[in-house]
Image 1 (cartoon, rainbow, N blue to C red):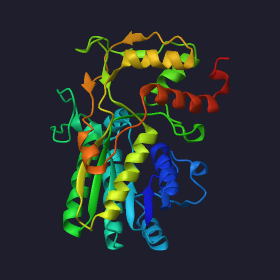
Image 2: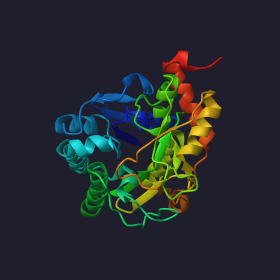
Image 3: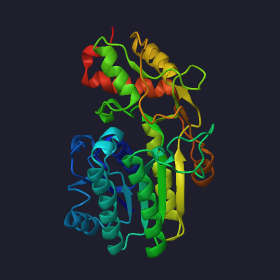
Image 4: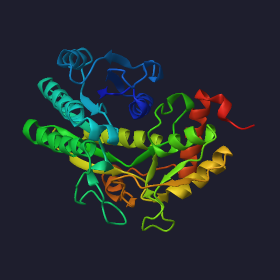
Length: 328
């Protein structure tokens, strides 16, 4: 079976590409390389350079490689930027998705997986967030992900696609140093950047109604994210066309506070990670932790890696690019 990964040269996409190839699947990647890196893809993967808004490139990729299923990663994903540039986010994330779906259905593709996000939930007031929780996104990024789920489900009903939407929680780590995240947008790399520059990591608010006053999140290793995609792809391949319509969380079901994560980072790196408390960021919920029960039941998948393993693998990737950062 051949899978087309849109945005497959990015941080999460390339991890999935490596695991799919290792599982014996054929993989092609469509990526505009705005944030992706062609050198980090497996040698067996065909790369088509192009945007999800480029219908001719999509048609050529689907036709040339005889694609059976699409895993759609391509999207803009910075919350703050989405507030400042909502038109850009809706065009890239929704019009891009619609263009991919139109090309795929016209090419006879019957399997489609969407990379979604826990941002669809907004500020849930529950211990564990299940897939049935109300979705009240708080920013244009989350809105585009929720609307994207609706569009995928509607296309599935109308055109007989089997579909899965996977809602990621807080992704961290790397399967190997060369696959590590280049961005400094999530907690772990943000802390790495500050401590290696001799600055205290920021804690955005320490007065939340949590045990230590800092936000609590569900951190998930990117290698676990990738294995969940492989499990979902196998489910899509096994089920008859139109026989699957799933929305699933990918998380560990365990909360880790910001202060607890700083302690782990300090243990792994040897740096002082005493935080500097700054004002809350607008829209940060106190606690967002996944219920991972449905994905276990539907796909037989559970996370394998713990927080220290995530941090250690992320640190190896950081030090591969910044060798001066590692303490002797």
